[in-house]
Image (cartoon, rainbow, N blue to C red; front, side, top):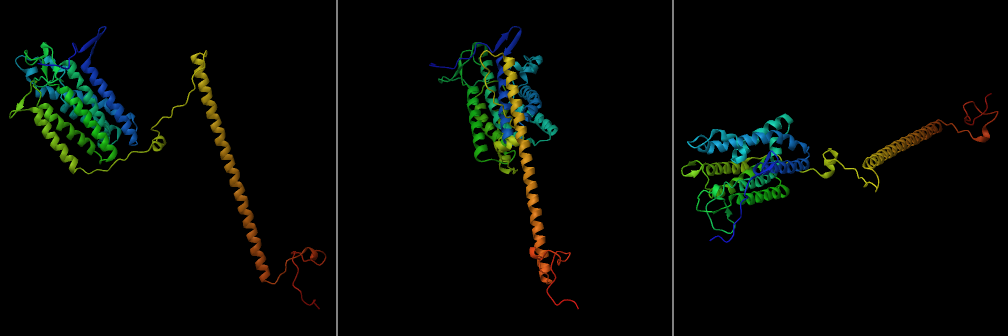
Length: 379
């Protein structure tokens, strides 16, 4: 007897007029937006333009969707090419069926292509994107809940998911393991671990992405063992289990073997110096009764006045610096003149000359302004 269960949505699509809004697609879009925002913030912390996240997503997302669909179709071909399959369903991604392995492979190919065009390091971008990617996967799993798909074995646990008769694997069983929920929670745990490791123990370039792959595939192993949806098997195990195990081992090896430079974060001051942070002007609220256009003009005038005042202060500072430099130059010349007079005085003293005093100036003074040394008059 089931005392409690997670209800499933009665439908996974809402029509906005003639336009169908499908929850599965909406979850994917929200996940992509979250991934781009998180990746942009992490790129900026590494001294890179956050807009790069959107530019790479422009290529990575379509490649990832195509790769995810190709993997799903190849791993479950009977649903499309079998006796009861429909080839036209291959393009109907809104009905579900996106393999994460194909998404990662296709997305990585698109990201590699975009990174080459932008001239940036793919491994650096991958490290920045890893937490955002796993968060996007967590959000995307709720699309499976709306579609009532990819659930696990029958169960009577209080957190079981209740499936409608049209979507049940066994018509006589209503509740199943909520594998979408398990993967959602596991992905959140992985995101937390990645952020903690990146903050406390910064890994070399590319290794954080390897850690993401290793952690995700480790959790996917036991979650995959609970699922009962149709899938091809190899040696009695689902293809996804073999894929998870192989990819997990490869990621662990890469994490242990790869040694790359560490990319430390840059400070907020350095971010501003690099032009990565746009300072927002402080705007006072418009006065009551003032039209919006007038308030906007007032704000613009205030900004212009502040800019002119800043330019005036800068010009005054430059003028003051110029005057100070001229004063220092004049003092230096005066000091040089005094030093030259002192050296000349010492030279004449060594030659036996006497300096001319005020009493000696007159008829007997020599033209040079100096008195001759005392001695007998000429005969």
